[in-house]
Length: 210
Image (cartoon, rainbow, N blue to C red; front, side):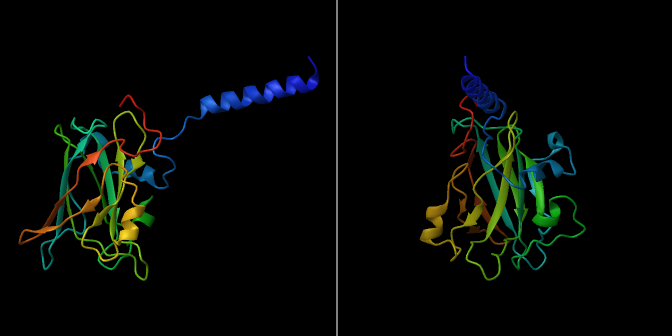
């Protein structure tokens, strides 16, 4: 066997080994998703209810968002799923107060929760503002960490009544985890909305056996 054939086999073997040693990441690249591990409370001790640092009823009308997380079949509730959320303040800025880690970029309005045995979650916060001078709709970022899989992001929570959520913007939504569009209901002392999350829905490289 000549030298060129040996070299060709070596290159092919190297590519094959690299291909097996580097499986595709569930959800694809996700800058900042590792922030889900910065919870001050151990992930297995988190509650299914979260009161965000900005939430207040004093002179404000907070926003309560609740829902159920389902497994990939869309029917079975998914317990023990960790959700990490963060968003801008009422001026559209990520304000970091004595922040560490990813809090320096995500700001201080962030928090963690874990679905209960029925797959339920709920959090209370104030409605964020869009970035000043930009056309992005106001939104709440969310990262998911389900048992046995690495964390990945899903579609942000956005607001159906936001004038920045144009038809063009809606077409850009990937519906990762299902639709993140919220329809708010004024219940007097606060606004409420709900969102169903389906694990693996429109998530690249999601395992089929989940």
